Length: 305
Image (cartoon, rainbow, N blue to C red):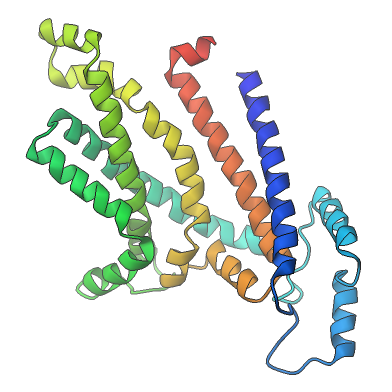
């Protein structure tokens, strides 16, 4: 297990390093001036701002200075939000995105896994077809389409649900439901495939021949190995929900990390974009590591190896 952890940590460090390096040079190749505003900025003022933020130095020097600051735990100052640290913006908004992501993940598991099990138990019957149609709809209909549909069809009849905002406890429901559909769809398909594979094994047929109840066969013998493909998907899915929720967060005006990502891209805020990419990369590595560890605990073969 220690070897697996060290291997995943090493891979994460390499991937995050390459990712941040690519983004560092890519964002600086985007046309535009991070200090452009509604008011005309004189060349002298722009030069002073560039010198203050270290943007007047050669690109290679800026690159090494950035990693030097990151090693000290400093992601730099936001260029768009003057006087605010990138690390402060992330620490303030990440709990909101985390809460939304966790609820969306649990809703997706609660919908997708039972749907996949039902589809496998009623293979090639109307229950199976209906479950797969729902799953395909969840994959095909993207979140920025579902969001406005839910705002019009759910929040209008239910007055206790706001169309957008983050003022009441119930405001998390609509964005969480919007985000969970894609996860539930993939989990349903993965669970169905895993369950069908396990139900065709010899030991399952032997259990049926001995008269073991179907519920006991599913819960004791089939469920754990059948869920392994779904568990493999959960790690990246959790990170993807948090990192990919900026569209939903902007639709429902959720004060999460998505607003900063959009602001960083539209205003050429190099430090903010790099800080978010670095944070997202580390988060993805942690999620994949937890997923691998869950697989090791679930599969005795992996545990013994």
